[in-house]
Image (cartoon, rainbow, N blue to C red; front, top):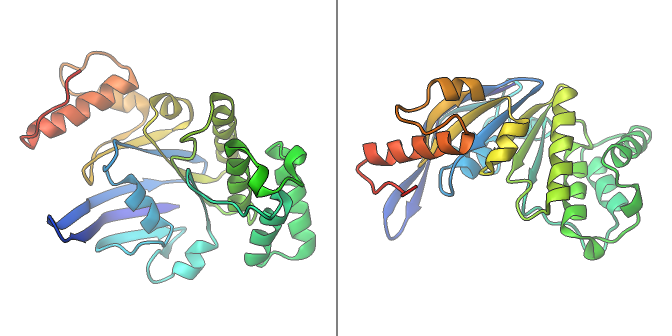
Length: 259
């Protein structure tokens, strides 16, 4: 469903010169799978997701959504994806129902289908109690539910979540993870970017660990544990992540973080 092959992205930095955000990464994600992108700040996760979402154009390489090229067929790709981030804004003067309805109309849904989809989504996401609440009077968690609802109103086969639980309290974050698991069970292909280890262990079927534009390791949690660097302290995801990053920085002659 998602194919990424040797994807590159360079930026021009007036102080440092060319900065390579992505250095030829490759991975695939399939239907009914949550594929996690895990990495520290600056690893290139958001850049990769913005390319997949057609917001950015790559410098090199290929990315396809459902067989469609994200550069040459970007209009069609946008109809095949839903995108949610931690900073997705909502309109202060529109209700939850009006916002989701508005996006459904943007996607060209017929009125009868749109009404049916909205009733189903508001019920599934437990949003009936905020149906008529204005965006300006919503909590952060309420706004995130609206963001998810409008991202899936057109029933896209691919859902992209970039740090979707950042800044949420424990209860709301847990609800978001339950929504992600439900989408996976419905056969969606989900790309899930985070730096929170417990979320990775809970919802991700496979993971790619990124660092400075490179993918250091890819696989299921069991495979990552099996192929952990020599001397890894334990099979905990946090330790595996730390050891891989530390090894990569040591290989590059950088100062490795202390444990």
